[in-house]
Length: 395
Image (cartoon, rainbow, N blue to C red; front, side, top):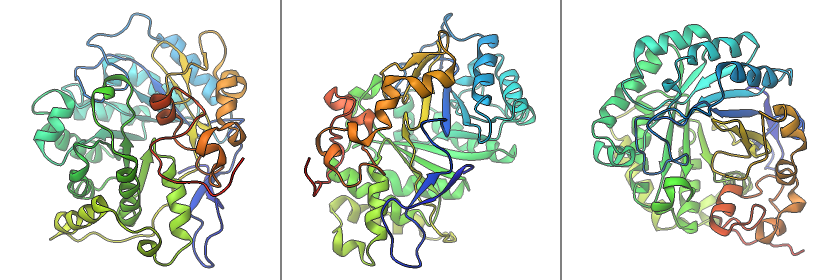
């Protein structure tokens, strides 16, 4: 990704790449990526939606002129400017979407899109957005088969439309990312989702670990031990496709730990879920030829620390999964909110963390998922219950 380099995290054995990438710029000064929820309107009714999306656009949404001003503020950071992702709801519900993409691009921003798979996602619209300057599109695939994916999305037939959308995005010349939300109910399909991802020739597979917020509170998240198994498995398959673990900051801790040993299984014995995922992976990949490549290390970016989210009415959050308001772009320019908000500043300080995260030797490179901590304990800076690691140091 633009603006990233390899950073230490913890030392790795001689001759190996550093296990975690650090940014070239100070995350207290500027974000690496900003997600803007341009609308909350969406035709789907996804079971895990963090936004509680609504059928029609909210009249309080940032208007076109306000959106242009927000893009100007993001561009004002100068190089390296933040990556910008327009999401929702479904951003394709906004009639001025191409105008916003074109304007952001004219300011020097790299603009990508995260739409829902609905009848609005057509090749003509993709071509228009590409011509306006859009760089990439992410599409959600939450199951390897229709029964699982359509149940997630709340609308029958979306699975087949999603497979067609993967082809349409790639054929339009846009970079393709697949997003997959993993829960206790669909985790066993991950190897077969991986096969779909590989067949679609995606640029990045972003695996979202369910945060119990919004509609997602009705679903079952993985246990911490199962999440650990999945993170190790994701590292094992990351030489097939670049993988990003969203809301699982300890993916970076696992990367550092694995880089320090020549025999990860001896140091981190596979649990029953990882054994099952490995077996299913061999089955899922059978008959295919998938080149191996050097894995891309995870990036040291987290909520409020290189990452920020702007909702449809202009409120700024550390993450879309972390409902703690840091400010409003209707009141204060975004750069000022990002640099001065007490909420965001606290998230950039490992010394402010409490519980196991505060005692952890990996606090600086991991810090835990602040969204998981807040959703499960109500403490923004507290323990991340989705992580099993027991720190060796005391405070």
